[in-house]
Image 1 (cartoon, helix red, strand yellow):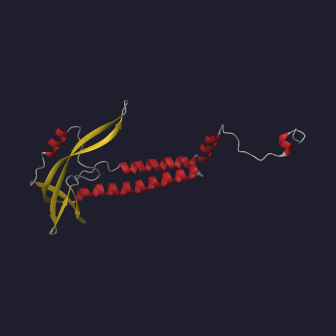
Image 2 (image 1 turned 90 degrees about the vertical axis):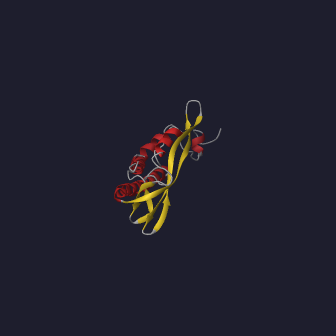
Image 3 (image 1 turned 45 degrees about the vertical axis):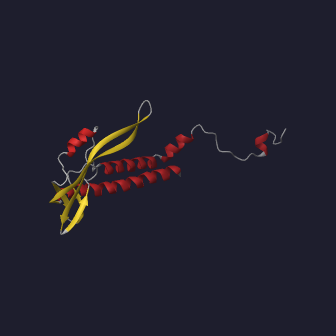
Length: 185
């Protein structure tokens, strides 16, 4: 029963990721057709992404730096503000603050910038139309579904293998099981 639940859980989660992945891929292709408008850079900052990484000695902090560009644009008489660089991720991440600062130099506060705006939702925009890692959710979803399918398909073999070498289930003893003549000695 536990194997079936695990298999169906993996298949369900994989299906969710796969559907999300297909939607994300469709958005990735759609962003190439978004309207280009001229926007204004409001602010440019260098952000730090910190994560823990396991190494041979123990855990260490891993830092990556990236520019965050806040910009505004006007569409159909409404003003909007955002900081999304592209679909799927932030700006490229760098090992040093200096590398991130170099990448940020192409943006200056108050300067003009090309903003790509979703024509069906003018509050949604990006600075870079090239999506990154758009296939990742779909691939991970397929992997989860395949794993769940394999577990379900081989559940009997897995169950037999995992119970091999374990003592048999307890049974109720009768008088004949206690002594050969049926009486306790």
